[in-house]
Length: 251
Ligand code: 13P
Image 1: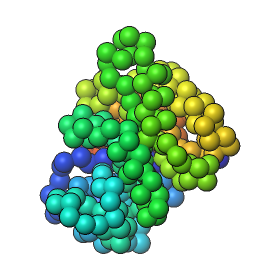
Image 2 (image 1 turned 120 degrees about the vertical axis):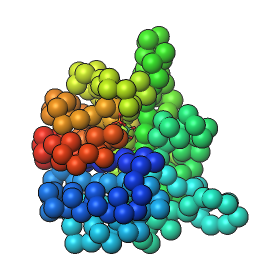
Image 3 (image 1 turned 45 degrees about the horizontal axis):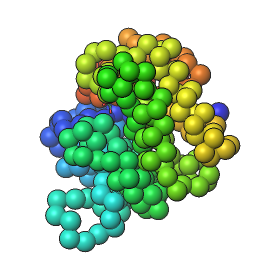
C-alpha cells in the first residue's frame, strides 16, 4: 500500500509570524492525522520557527529547494544538512518555477536528488509538461526525459525513498486542473517508466498530482489508481481549503 501524501507548497508567501499562525491552525484541525501524511513547505526563513510549532504534531516539514553542494562558498544558497538539522524531512526539487525562472536542468535536479538522499531528506521530484508540449502530443516524451534525467544513476533502493509530483505547467496557478482521467493517464505512464528503470521499486513510490488542486476537485483526483496525493500551491495557503483537501483525499 502506497503512502498518501498531501503536501502544501507555500512558495514565496508568508512571513515567519504568518507562517507559524497558519501552522498552528493546521495543527488544531489535522495535527494528529497520520493518514494521509501531511507535509507543509514554508519559505526558508520560516522553517525554523514552523519546525518548533510542529513539534508533537503529525505534520511533516518540507523545504522548497536546496543546493547541490554540502557546504562552501556559494553565497545565498542553502545546504541540505542545514535543513535536516532544523527538522526538515522533505524537499521539493525541480519545481517548474525553479526550472523556468532559475534555469534548473534535469542534471542539476539529479545532483540535488542524490545529495538530498545522501543527507537523509526525502526529495519530492517535480515533472510536468508545458501547454505547447501537450498540444503537440509530446507529454509522455517530455515527462520521460525529465524522469530519466532527474533520477539518473539512482538504484532500486534509493528510488523507494523518493516522491514524484506530476505538475502540468499549464495547470499551475491557472485554475485549470487536469481531469482525473488526464492526470491518471500521465501518472500511470510515470509508474510504467519507473518500473522499466527501477523494477519493483516503482510500485511503492507515491506519485502526487499538482496544479490547481482545491477542496472541490481533490476527491476525484485522489480516487485514481496511480494518484497517491497532491502537491498544493494556492489552496494550501487557505486553511479551510487545505483541510478540505486533506479530508477528501482518503487514507
Ligand atoms: P497551484 O495549486 O497554485 O496551482 O500550484 C501548484 C504547485 O505549483 C504546487 O507545487
